[in-house]
Length: 77
Image 1: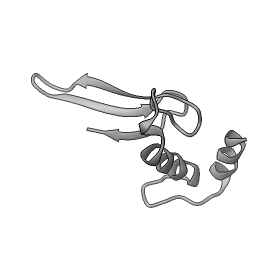
Image 2 (image 1 turned 180 degrees about the vertical axis):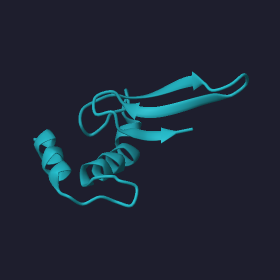
Image 3 (image 1 turned 30 degrees about the vertical axis):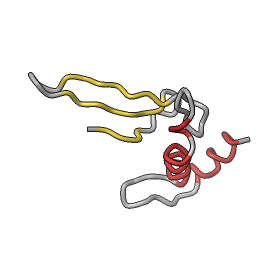
């Protein structure tokens, strides 16, 4: 049922100034209010949210928090 709702919200032609659809906004709201406190961290689409690190330079490390199913990026550096 949730996937159908997210699919319908994705088809609405509204986008924020950052290019996010209504389904992306709902996923972000869900993650920051509920999903980040679950073990493992969950996205509204049902995927697992993980934080990946990758080297950017000699002493610099970048990271990205994203869903493995819908590929929505929640946070990055």
